[in-house]
Image 1 (cartoon, one colour):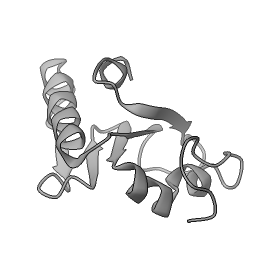
Image 2: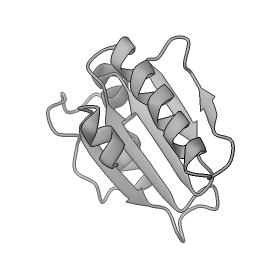
Image 3: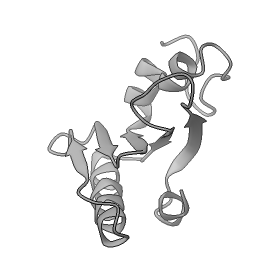
Length: 110
């Protein structure tokens, strides 16, 4: 999350998944202002996780960079362009209705 903050990611959210899913312990969701920023953040974060010794990282969606998934084992990171994030609204889905709409994005588009 510190790296995403340093890279000027927007609306960074961490969702605990323990007890909700076996895919990971946490899901982190953040937005970038453009496909270029999303791709840059994803590549930098993937390299950082690998250098920290957490094993290989899977990156999905990098060529288009509208939505990039970073699978780092116990933590899954979703990086979006704002319009795509608003459309899928993962925060609400994974929080099972507990999460408010993403700030700064149009509501009612999920």
